[in-house]
Image (cartoon, rainbow, N blue to C red; front, side, top):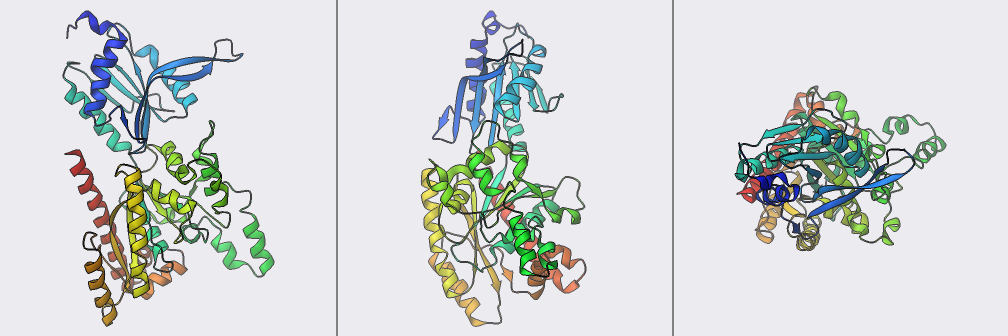
Length: 442
């Protein structure tokens, strides 16, 4: 296509192609603190002599914290070739900015690169730079493939099956081929123990209190949740130092699915965050660095409210509230509803969206289960009841063995019913998220 001479200038391409593309793709110039364009973003790169650094400017840094995706855009005019810019984008700009994705664009072509990969992750030939819709659709489609959904499993009462729900949902999502990260915010660290990263087998085999203390002391120098929260703002922050593969992965037969863990331990204490500005939003900030690594992040929160808990809610796009069908547990639903409302107001409705209440450990042979279910529907009419998880001895046995319930069901036929409940609940939650996000796009 023959273009006018105006397209020979980068500034014109920026305004009439790139900015229009971003707006059409649903990425405005600014949306509170969640979406922001940074034109002429400055990056320090080594100089030619290797004796110091020189400052370079990338045309745009785009931060879309709503979807956990940030990327650079390097713009070229119709006269300029994209080829010469690839090395600079991959080896200098992405590396020095600690970002994963970069976009090269001129009026004829878009290429999207992932740091460490020489071949483009996606390409699109532009037939007419004045026709923005197909260009924006290409970018939107790509961003949908690398976004991460964050879900907090949260309630203000302990002992309701919160961790059981978290680890089994993680495994069910991984079975579907998803890459899943579990973040353990509870200082009891039961999720980390269940997922096989807190030396549960060694603790079980210990023959004395001294041996157990030695095992626990080994966590002192481990890079885990608290180090992640404290160090995620550092320029050389590398999230991989803090994340560990779960033992659940040995049971997965799908090639793509996996479960990783950002573990906690007795070190998970809020006092280190109290003196930090926006200390309750560190997890949200750190997870931005994981763009494209995971499809889902499940956050196991503590039942008490402190800065650790707030980190979980501020990082969660969605919230699931598990509750036993007993009087005290139901009263524990009120706090999460109030707290998430505060977060939604603070984040312009992009965090803390409640998907529903999960009735846990139900027993329909007792009158109280039916009574409390009716009470929940009456007091929280706008919050849906999700698929329930019935009381089952095999659920407890799987937890004690640190196994997903669906793995136990492969060996014990009587556990199949419990496994099916967790699978159905996970599917229902995914379908609810799909429906909400489809409505937003429309």
